[in-house]
Length: 615
Image (spheres, rainbow, N blue to C red):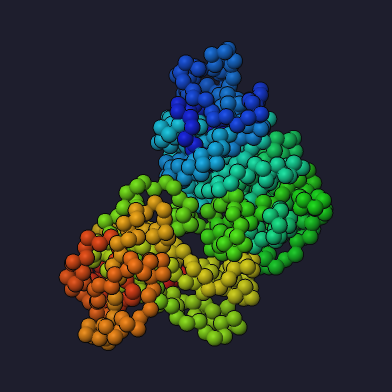
């Protein structure tokens, strides 16, 4: 038997004493679905309402097939009991998480709770996660064996994209999907790095003929009416199995069985999403191509073997046996569409669910924080000892920018980025010298982070990610597109003084105490060659750059020479140590006490991002 596991979480603050259970792919079917006529908050379960089963017998084997009974005498298997307890309108939402992503789980749950969604379950992959979910009363189940094993360690470790742990999750995930569908309920699978801004169930209900509704990794909407995307999207981009609806129907069950069969083949572990897309596209297109052949996939016109079903844009897949719909990017945006292109701002559309794709690991947290979609930080995150703010200067774009070919655009982009990184280097040094937290600046990118792919595929994408035809250049880009920002403060003994930082939008956060927004001191840095006695003339001609700071709250105080040593800097600004925010109006050069160590830190933080380097 294959143990169930999955890579999602869900937490809602509504069920103290939630049930822990361990389940396998061979779980039995459910008898009933509970009351679907109302949406009550889940009842609190206690030891008096049912008998808590032991997870394992003395022989170490799962006792899944055994039953436990409620006070009224109903005896159900573990999976049956928990699904029946929380299903509403024949639908259950399932997500999964481990200790490495516990903060994602709390963020996911916070938004689920705001929407008052109660028909959810979270799979806990380890003891730490299970205990944390139990403390907040989240509806969850344990999907791990407390006996140490290789698979237990794998599921509890890092699940970086395409890592061994990430790939192994697929087998367990599919097993759980199969088991829940056997409970005769519709299943919504949600990755833990999604943010639910609106309840998607009313939208899903508009497409009762759809067997599968799935989000897409696409970067360009094909329609502007909030209806399903053009099914040709499936040819160019994967359906993303991190957000999808699977209805309990025989054809869907057969699809899931074939999906599971592929993932259980001996040999190297396979990516569950790639195999799902391979299956769903069987018999869908006249001119499908292999996934590794991407030389013209963004321009290729995929022709459906069968026409779309009526005007709904549903399409037949899996050998004409399953009806599939691609959820619209306007309401279910990929990470590139939401964080990089920000199409929701241009169209004034409020998304339903945002998925933090097109970023990995800690970078997802930063993007969610920057978009003010992150609710998992403790209060002390918003009360640092002191902040340092900087606006970056930019090069003026060439007059013929719109006519420049891709390679020339890349060269200008790199030149402008080098200028911005030099300014960032200065501000980071000031922050370290003054023991302040640096608010990461908003960088301006003239090319998408993934511009190299546009050059490899076709130069006519002009620095955009291939297919992102609506992306406007230049654009305000996240710090993670420029910096290895987690490396700003890691391992000080190896890489030098740590640069403590916050996201660029912190000053706009409603969680930031008002005193930070009211107590701002502007620090002027004179241009190269200026003397301190020339400051008045210079400052009189200098426009106010602090657009997000009200004029009455800005106090012009200290002035710094263009070049300053770390000790001189500290001496000149000693009287302002208690002020909450220092705002740099410009940058110069700072000589750190240990320049060599400081160069190591900056090189460490910029290496491998766009191949930028300051040295």
